View 1 (tube, rainbow, N blue to C red):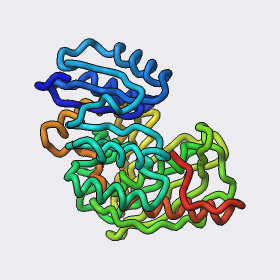
View 2: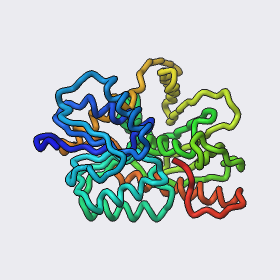
View 3: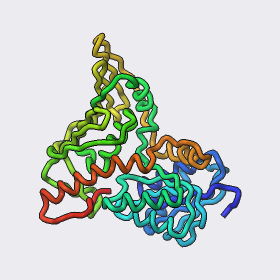
Length: 328
């Protein structure tokens, strides 16, 4: 490997992993990249997506492997874009025989509660700077919203839409709530989850519909719903005593309503792609700066109540007893 460049390891070259790779391909500091995936088809897709990006002289070397044996012994940044079912094992194995300075972890983090503490202790022991990729914190529209909402609290966050993947994606909106309020301590009410457990698009995984409600320690409220009936576009609505903001992410439209004056203002915005974010985040982490993503410990506080709710719900409505939740 080239010694003068930062060493980056990407584990998992599937749909999301290949988008991370496209982001890394646009980085503005010298790097050497190793891409690991046991599936040769995924590696091929990642290679194809890599070459779609304009050639970058900062990419000093890129290699594709089916296992971690040939990965560098010292890694400046690891991006773990595997499924939740193997992620804890991948992180544990990686840290067992390699030095890693920074890690970006995909979500949903892990399927078993014990893995959160186990991985957390390992990250702390080895002083790894670890963040979780809930990228709405980086979206200009939500950064703008945080400024607008500052001092106007408490807030109520409502998310509603059809079949948008409550199981694997609810963490995005709980993280958004934490970002807007600065509070990661939440209580969940899962009584309105639907009893029907759906098969995920990915074999061996499940999905949920229905509603998760709750509050945080500051007194802010949330209600997050995924309807089993089709036809409702995803909408994010944020209300305070003085204002209501309605965000249609897919349409790129935000409506700002002043409850005091009754005035309305509409803005358009663009949702960044993952391929536009990873290079920027990687640069900040490699330079030792705050990258804007959620620190591991904060994300763990948000993940665990969700995981416990889902496992409890599975055990209530299914014939099988679970000690894990098969979401990804």
